[in-house]
Image 1 (cartoon, one colour):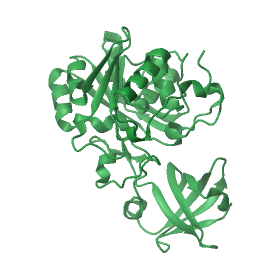
Image 2 (cartoon, rainbow, N blue to C red; image 1 turned 90 degrees about the vertical axis):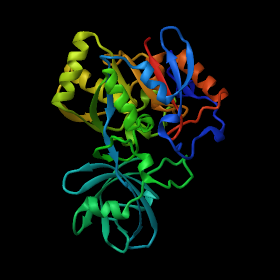
Image 3 (tube, helix red, strand yellow; image 1 turned 30 degrees about the vertical axis):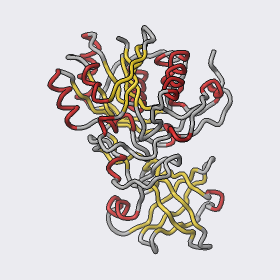
Image 4 (cartoon, one colour; image 1 turned 90 degrees about the horizontal axis):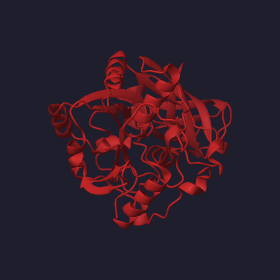
Length: 345
């Protein structure tokens, strides 16, 4: 029914796009969406403790954002080139998204910080993508920490005083070009309260790349092709999740990337299994859900794959209404903004 990208558009005043994170993560506003009744509640994130119960399994994505944005110059011409590292491949090759990409041909060498790091184009792909082989002396991650920049989304124009505010407090596994932003609201104290209540916390990993934040460029939703992202699930996580499923306990996902991991593993095996792989899973209305009962998520860009996923879970009419209410109530939107908790209760 809702098969056009334009069906997922909405009016958003620019002043509602959050430019900076709140001083206290847990004080973000939280809209609670009751998927069965359609009721909307206006709370704060610290109230999440009241909506999770003993026996629930909370699944979070423990990926860590790397300083993936590099500014360099072409060795042969001195032209400026912006490089965003998306995905690590074998032999020091990275899949990258390039600004000024049309100037980077096969064999082009881009130099960063007087040659401390260089990148040579070894494959030209479409839509500004290139495979770049990194050339350096020493330990790559250390060089990247020194030379790279936090890859904030283009709609955030303010400089970030503390780069750790674009990391979740449980970020652990290096590899993302963007933060799993639903997790930014959590504090260690909130996790302590949840564990005391009997909520089990499970980590999975999905390295956020172009699949999550690439804009839609097709009018027909089904024509959009997702970019692949790498995910991991441990044996311990799979065991806990399978037991919860068998016992009818709720599985609650923190963010769209946790959802993509859970659903990708389930679609692959028909259950949860210890594994790693790549996913191009695109969830939009009509998708048959298998794994989750509730979900925490931020407010997403108009006409994005992420708002389509939320409409698939909560129902198109309810979610688009909730977004209208969020605009009316002046919620803060996108990465540093407020959040929505979709619950089946």
